[in-house]
Image 1 (cartoon, rainbow over the protein chains, first blue to last red):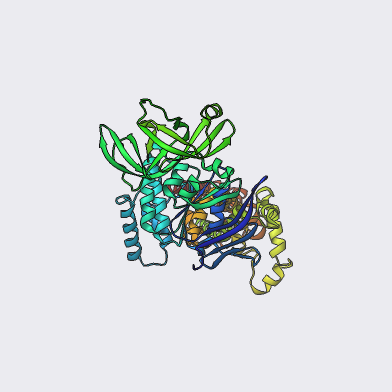
Image 2: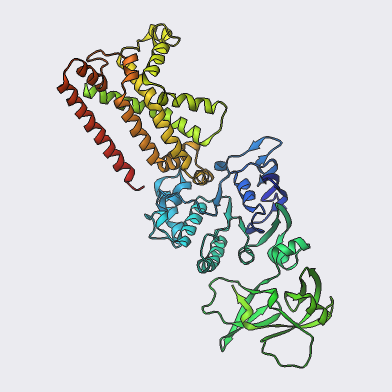
Amino acid sequence: MSTPLLQASFRKRFNANTEIQVSSLTIDSPGVTVLFGPSGSGKTTILRCLAGLEIPDEGTIIFQGETWFDRGARRHMAPAQRRIGFVPQDYALFPHRTVAANIAYGLQGQNASAVHARVTEIMGWLELTGMEQRLPATLSGGQQQRVALARALAFRPRLVLLDEPLSALDQPTRHRLRGELRATLKRFNCPVILVTHDRVEAAVLGDHVVVMEGGQILQQGAVSEVFNRPANLAAARVVGTDTVLPCQIGPVTDGLATLTVGTAQLIALAPAEPPDAEPTYVCIRAEDVILVRPTEMRTSARNQLNAEIQSVTDEGMLMRIELDCGFPLKALLTRQACADLELKPGERIMVMIKAPQIHLI
Amino acid sequence: MVLFSTRMAVFSTLLILPPGLALAWLLARHNWPGKSLIETLVSLPIVLPPVVTGLVLLQLFGKNGPLGHWWYAHFKIVFTWKAVVLALSVMAFPFLVRSARVAFAEVDTGLEQMARTLGASEWRVFFTISLPLARRGVLAGILLAFARALGEFGATIMVAGNIMGKTTTMSVAIYEYMQNGEDVHAWALAGVSLVIAFVALWFGEKLQRRPY
């Protein structure tokens, strides 16, 4: 394997009692790497250190064999030399420049017609055509987000850094743009590091995930790996207990859709309009999963699956049960319910989920 | 003389513009040793009686002054039009710097950082982001500096004196006319300065109101 894309190990004090410890953050493939963790876990500071806007107290940052930062060698490459496409949380659009001028800002040094061609091309891709002469303040939140993205991508950066790209938007817009963003990032095929505290966003947008808490990296790996098999209790607490998996939507009858998840089939309410982006993800809150000892009975729950208990973990008030029912599934039960059912790893159990509680994203 | 006065004020304002903006920028964006000393020194002419500032300048640039001694051998400053420019510049400088400094400080550093990540040099960041966004405050500073320069009396008369047709500015002339009992001339000049001040303010307002 050739040199990794990005190798970073550094320390940075970011407030009185927290220090960020990035120990061997390694990204060796293109695609989207998500820095995931609760607010205040130092994700934004890491991004700013990678952009060169903040200087770590110690350590090194090496990108494609090029030293961006090396405390020992007293080397700090200026942000202007790194060629990164940075989209901060507030987008930082230049209020006095038109949309076209904002997008063209990184394209200096090229001749006017080349700049114009590139701006036109990228505005077309991001569906911004016609807004060339508008000022940022006249745009909606979603449009501003796309302009910021267009500006960051226009000058063909070597690495794209996105800080909570959807958090400034209202809920319905965020929902809609999530799919769009995924499609855009796929199309540009440039390595991306994205910061988010939203689990669904992380699962939908990310190929790899780095789980963080209190300035520490708890786990890094492929999204499905990390989200479904957290390495330790701390990582599990951060990634949460929801099941988020890719699925395929099958035939729809009487408003109910049949989904294929892993080797199992699930029934869910059919989405009002078909999700535009592939693949679609299924999201099941662990609290909504019901476990039943197999008996003869009829139930209103549309989904009944045979499952094997993988593990039972104490989570304080609740117990976390990991199951295999053709796909990995997580359930949260009260301590008492757990005791009543006498759940033990290796045993088989019946899983029930009501169709409306299966969310498609 | 009206023309001379206006020309002197405009020239002084233009002269202090580059160093004034550079200093304002340095004060707003960076911390450096001696910063507060420079800050105080620059602002001194605002609080000091203008005559005192004039006296100090006369000492510094005069025939026997530490700076003047060398200068004098090459070209004379005091009691020439250059002394008028010197006095006006020193008196107007703090108004420009203070106003521009506040304006620069209010520009979102996130926008400047954004420009840097897009590959912009520090010069480009300054001229395409910081300066346009601080435009209002900078314009207000230029206007204040110009007004100050136009109305300056105390420092001018100390270093440039009152040589009719050579160093006499409007303010000095108004004083002189009153002294000689030529009230009509004094009032006429007062009217002219009112018009100039009015036009300058109106123009400044107009520029400031313009959207980006």
